[in-house]
Length: 401
Image 1: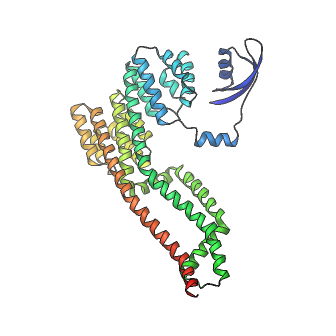
Image 2: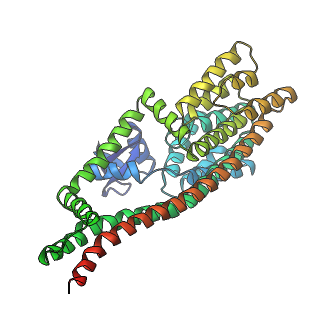
Image 3: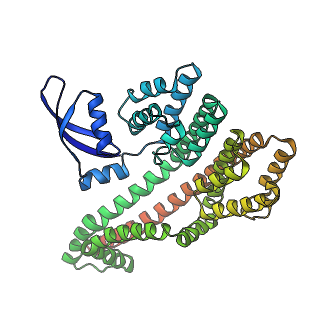
């Protein structure tokens, strides 16, 4: 949505001014008229560079916000409230992006659009899987049940992401602290010690000379580190935006010890959960596979699902099509085969998802268990090197007296 700046007359004839968000100028005028505000000047507001950065990196809709919105909407519909009344209540509950979207969705629904089509206008808030499930719920007349399932799924995602962040926050803090201390030592502390050594004409060991050389380089060329970080970020974004580059990056992620296993389990947990939700909502297996492939955050998995999809279209059972791809563990094809035989594909897929989620949690524990001692070893080596390099010249000076 765009932001429009307006000057207008209110119902009492007073001059008023402000901003309004809308799809286009025509809708902006309609929104103002609903509030009995009649604009005589309206134009699109250009975002400043800082506003753009704020929206890009900080003002993002979280999974928790979407989960809360979904749960509230499901509860109100289940209680018998009309969809328009439920959306009216939700739009007035805050000023988050989800609440603003609810206001737009309400206008579209009142204008005759379906809920799924209205939500599809906000791809940054509602995923393709979310839209497909809402569409299936509307078609089958079980929107409240579908929304409850969606809320359960989103809350499970939020809980797992919280576990991942909680497990990695300690290593992240320690590594960040190490980097900050290293920069302070190299740029501020070591140069003062160097002048002290030169004043006493101390004989410097090899370790001290290496440390001083590194310090001199960082003092004179510290900006190169900033350029390197920005350049690496830009290069990564450029490479990952291309399909072949994204494929290479995904291949590397799979091969990283411990992390590769965690990455695989997380993707498979999300994939099977999504597929189970779609199949359980009555979406055809072909459409469910297409949507799941598009939602997969991995090119190789996406391509594997699309290959399996083409084979299913030709009449091959999904279990056999999945089993031919080495990226998918045997348990996936075996459990899907059970689902095909029993006719309970959705239940089986959700159980497989829980299995991979528990495996992900175990891999996460293994990752943190491996990272912590590694950090301590690196910290010990770094501190030991700096202590030896700093203390040895001082010891040599004191031994001369």
